[in-house]
Length: 173
Image (cartoon, rainbow, N blue to C red; front, side):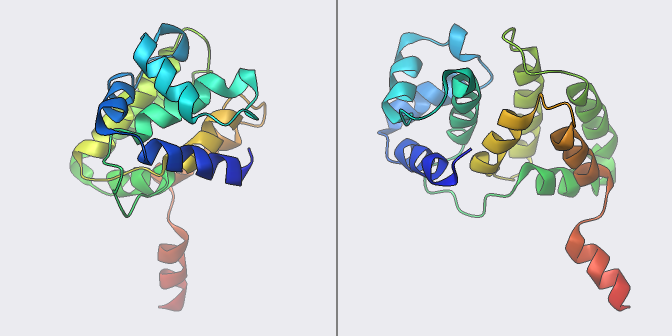
C-alpha cells in the first residue's frame, strides 16, 4: 500500500460534506458489493485511481470505519494499541478476547462475515472513547489473507502482549 495514496484518500474523506460522511458511516460493516448507491458514489469520488480493483472492498471498509468518528478527531490510535488498552481492563478483557479469537480465524472474503466481526469490535472500541487510525487499519486489511498471518499475530500480541513502552519501563526498574 502506498502511504501517500492512503493519506490522500483519508484527507478526501475528511473533506467531504457531513451528509456524504454519514452515508459512508451508515455503510460501515457492509461490503462494497452490498452498499447503497450514495455510499458507492461517495467512495469512488474519494478513492485514488491507482488503487487495485482487488483492494477496493478493503479501502471501502476502512473508509467507512474512518467515518464513524468526526473528520477533526485527533488522537487516533492503531487498532493494536486499542486492543492493548481494552485487554488491560479486566471487566472487558475476556469479551474482547473472545471477539478477537473468532475474528482471527476468519479470512477476508466476499461474504463480509469477517468485516461484520471487525465492525462489531470497532464499535466496542468506539464505545470506550478510543478512535482508530483507519489508515493503519487499511494496511492490515490489505495484508489480512497473507499466509504468514502477520496481521493476526500482531493483533493477538496487541491484546495479550505488552506494549514496547511498558516493556522498556519494566527493564529500567
